[in-house]
Length: 200
Image (cartoon, rainbow, N blue to C red; front, side, top):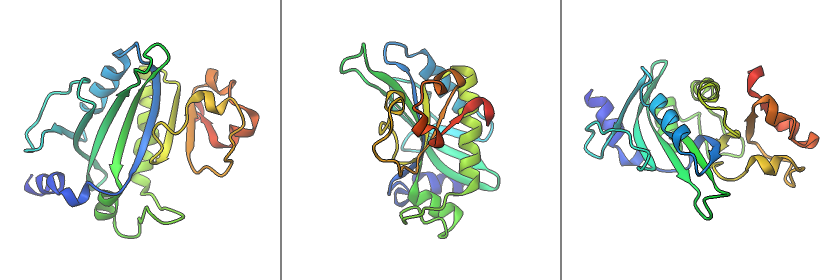
């Protein structure tokens, strides 16, 4: 447990950018799905936390936009956090976002220096990608979100509505995930970037 505490408290691992699963969940006026998603993640068998700064367990509370803890993937323990943002300007047209994030410094420390995430062609550990794919499928079953994205620093960069028109930057490295009903709304030119959740 001491080693886990050291990893969690190591501020050097809380730097760089994020590799993240960013989810445009639902309109901001509905917070219930955020609570469902938060409860799901923080009760997984391979997740410890959320913890406060002293490594003592705290209760989940969606009023706290950030929860931090540890997750065990195969034989690797890595710090991570969930992040929820409620767009309120204006609340009638804003969205709730739910992100699961891994610091790039933690990825390199835990998985090895070959996973240098700041290069032009970043290499991501399969364990993280597999976790994200399984998790987005599980979360979609709990509440069918609008759009999920998987990439570095991708949260809030795109909305489902952006994908209904041809993207101006057709070089994106982001992976997008939508349900079948939303897939029908995606511009044909963008479908090479978009996967249907039901087919994963």
